Image 1 (cartoon, rainbow, N blue to C red):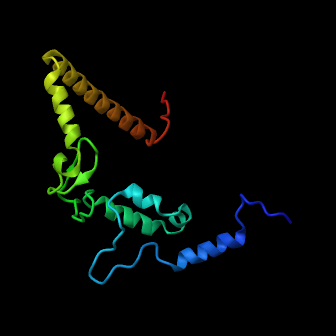
Image 2 (image 1 turned 135 degrees about the vertical axis):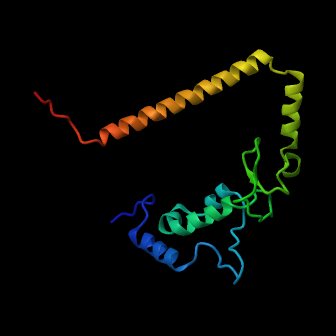
Image 3 (image 1 turned 180 degrees about the vertical axis):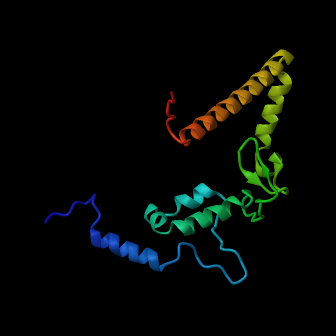
Amino acid sequence: MTDDPNKPSTSAAASAKANADDSPLFPPAKPGKRVNYGTNDTLELLERIPSELVDLKLDDVLTAVKEVDNLCDYARCKTKTSLMGQDCQHCKKRFCFKHGLPEVHGCGEEVKRDERKNFLHPKPLKTVRHEKEMENAKKRLDAKLKDMQMGRTQKASGTGKKKKGK
């Protein structure tokens, strides 16, 4: 019987599953403290976890991702941002109020560049007005499409075909 190097053996997969079930996905936390996942970046956290473990311990991974998403994205800051936090317009990350300013968390140069561009090349008032009108029209269209979709779902879930009476 020849072994295919690309195909994992079933005994190796079974032993990996047994080892994954026994060992915790993350180091246990000390009593009274939160688990230290080592990073505030969700993608960085997920890259370190092998996909086989994610399949086996999905609940643990989802708990870890939810906890990391509720923390400030600034390095070494573990402040919770679930109730009060700021989203950066430039890097799209969520920070606590202490690190919310772009200059503090590292987006200062991008802000400076955008403000300089807006100052040197302002949009004409007519263009700004037109963009607002287009945005409002898009919102109205989306609302109308949503209403039409709701009407179709209600009609489809109705009693069915109506009988013609004479």
